[in-house]
Length: 363
Ligand SMILES: [Fe+2]
Image (cartoon, rainbow, N blue to C red; front, side, top):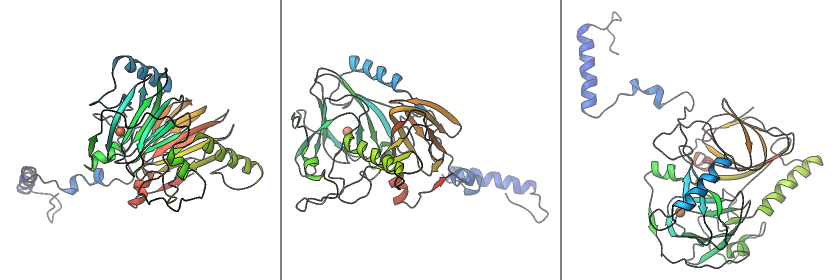
């Protein structure tokens, strides 16, 4: 606003101001002073909204697509994304995270491809599918997918799936697709039509090499991403069980009373298992209630077992096994449970930390 010495703009000044804005627009320029509040808010004002997707809705719809839509080259995967209604025109769960239910029918195969987007699979129920992942050394490793397992396919690793059973299997895919899209960093390559391997080993090679706590194979080559590609439920479960048992014995280790949690990490570095997404498993003992926490950055949770009540911002959800919910940036989150609850979480925390944008508030 142009202000004269008397404090009131003259008619000539108002006309000149209108012309100035018109000339800005014509020159593809935009003054900060008309948009500062939107560009630089006091605190995050996410477009994404708290949102719940029920497994009892997702799974039957995915199964219907299994009867109608083939898996093959082009579409690549029978994956159905969770689209946050606060992000219209996208199929994003949050501004940085993509979450989808993927469904593979009996004896089906999903062909090889690779991309700069980083991905993981989390299995809430079922087994029988193998994900073949390029181990980074040109060799393909066949990795069994079972209930409670976290499987990694870091960026630019070839991957393909094959179902060796006579029953379908569904799981959750998490990717950093929105982030990579926003950064214009996406590259994608098709692999061969024929699977690199249809092996079905009980234990994959990467687990045999890297799957021992605190033991780094001296002869293994260094890799930018986690050399361990499978995190098994038996280990996750044992770690959470131990935390709550130690708490009961009066020892430290839990996040807060009755709230155990573990983070999936790269055994070669101790940092997050994936460079752009944090992955964690949380367990609330029966009757426990988490502290209320809000973080800069967004996350998606999936209830793995049990039930509870989740509060995200002003929304309140009663959740059960398989249900997923999105937590927008800076939205306070509280989880409580009567019977006990296990929940998987993934978030964009590593990106926020790398950029110096991380911020947490616990109450
Ligand atoms: Fe992929």
